[in-house]
Image (tube, rainbow, N blue to C red; front, side, top):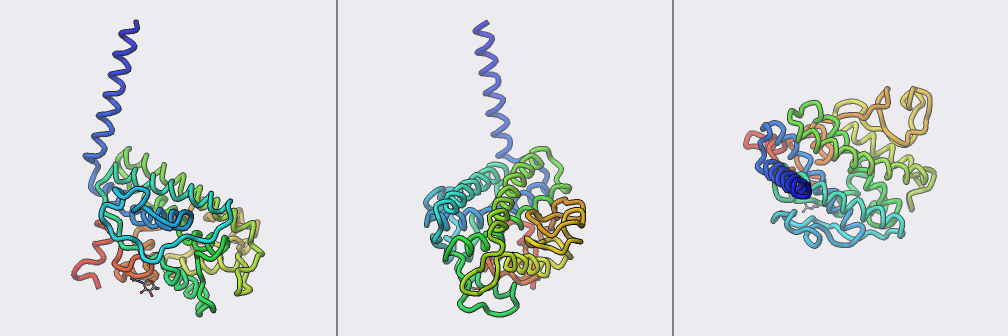
Length: 303
Ligand SMILES: *[C@@H]1O[C@H](CO)[C@@H](O)[C@H](O)[C@H]1NC(C)=O
C-alpha cells in the first residue's frame, strides 16, 4: 500500500517534470509563439517601472537573468510614495517579474528591450494628452497621484492586448498562460483605477486640473493614437457610455455590455510609441519593441 502510494507520487512528479520541460521546448504553433511573445514588451516595461518606482532598482538587481543582457532602462528612478502606495506598487513589480518569468518559460522571447522611463517620456504623454505643454513638466515620480496617473498609462494597454489576442490563440498552453496574465493584469488596472477614482476630485498639483480630467485625457489620447475608435474610457463618462448607458461613474472601462475592449498589437504599438504609427518607434520604446510582430513593422521597408 505504502509502496503503491510512493510509486504514484514518483509517477506524478515525473509527469510534472516532463510537462514543464516540454513547455520550454515550445511545441506551440508559430502564431501562438508570436502572440505570446509580443506582450513581453509590455511586461518588461511594467516590471521595470513598478520595481524602480517602489524600490529604486529594477530587474538588474532582482532578476538579472530575466533582463537577458538587454540594456537598462533610461531614466527610471524611485518615486516619492506613501507607505500604502509603495506597498501596492512593490507587489505589482514582483507580479510583473513573475509574468516575465512565466512567458520566458513558455516561449523563447527576447532580451529586455530599451525602455525610456524618464520623466520626460511620461511628460510627453501628458503634454500630448492635453495638447499643450504642462508647466512645470509632469513628473511621474513626484508623488502618489502623479505615479498612479503614470501607472494608469500602462497595465490597461496590456489588458486590451490580452483580450484581443485571445481568440487568435490555438494551443491550450497558450490560452492558459494568456488567461492567467489577463486576470492579474486587469486586477492591477482595477486597483489603479479604484485608487484614482477615490482621488478623482483632487487636483494634480500645481496644474489645478483634477485627477479625473487627467485620466480622461490619457484615455482620449490612447483612443486617438490607437486609431480604432473608442476602446479606452476615463473615470467619469457621459451616462450613455457608462454601464447599461445609465451611469457616469466608470471605475472600470468596458464596452456597451461592460465587456473589456480589445486591441491588436498594431494599435498597442501606435500607443506605446506615442507616434500613432506602428512603424515609427519612440515614446517608451526608443528603438522599437522586440519580437516578430513588432519587428515586422520595423523591417528594411518599414518606414
Ligand atoms: C527619452 O524620452 C525623452 C522624451 O521624449 C527624450 O527627450 C529622450 O531623448 C529619450 N531618451 C532616449 C535615449 O531616447
